[in-house]
Image (cartoon, rainbow over all chains, first blue to last red; front, top):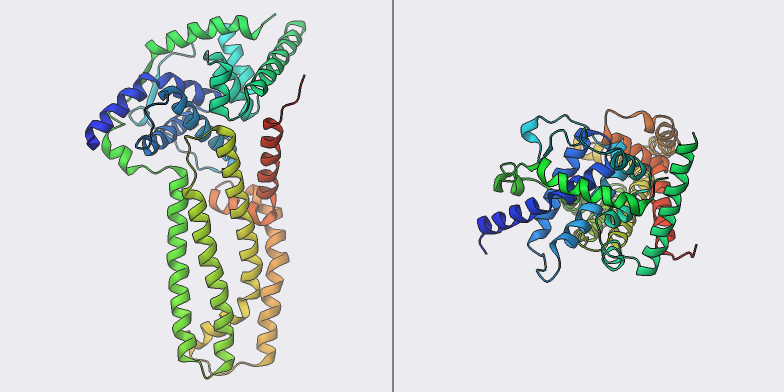
Length: 168
Length: 222
């Protein structure tokens, strides 16, 4: 496949899976400019790895792996990066008014995810996006039993957290 | 009470709305942008490659110096010591580059994060050892530099001891400065990283993350 054709195919696939990028960026970065930086970094890494993409795999699984790996690394070095403000033309993902239209439950979910450790953020995102335990295990690299145990623990943590909020 | 499974329905609805609200800037994804951009790991590899080229040039230059001064023990010996240091630095740069190039982000998250944490730990240890070795080779470096730049033919024992003492004094001084000011260097991420590497903060963070990863991978029943 020629480079322009490969580029076109890549853009179409990324466009179809842009929601994954958005949710990963939103879950790992509080700051809007950081989210944009992360989105660009994920896309660069996706493109760099695209030539070796095995078409027998699902593009979403492959995207999750790369996006989460880049996001966790980004999150861990957040305090040692130079911040810069981007104009709208430089932003790769635009979601006008998305946060304003969120339901209270979705906002509460994002806040819950925000308080989790980076690896648990990955688990809960994959779970909420409807992936099976087997698919989550495949992306994260742990056993299905371990995924089930951790998801169950996260559900418990969430119940306790919101019970506490309700009481307060 | 909010339950994760109940909220999953809301998440599905949120996911559906995202289809309508998110716009991907395809123009920004043009070939020029993608080809010109480098991932963080590639930037690090490029930086290491530049370092390897510089160290290789130093090894070659020191080799020429040793050859030119082979009969003069007082210059050939310090240059040989420096050359050993430069060769060690060159090989560690190549080792880091090789490790970085093997990292494939499309592999499972825990595997890649472990590889990245190990790479980070290796890089920090090399920085710390380079600092200690660098202060030890300060005196031979001063001898060679004085010979090359100023043409100095002899050096006294007192001069030599002063430079050794100066080099060694830099170890506690750099440790103190890094511990005291490392976290305050917010204007320069490079300096902040270097000082936190020297102070050992980044090594502790990398080790803690490796422990976190091991714990995450282990199955603990509820």
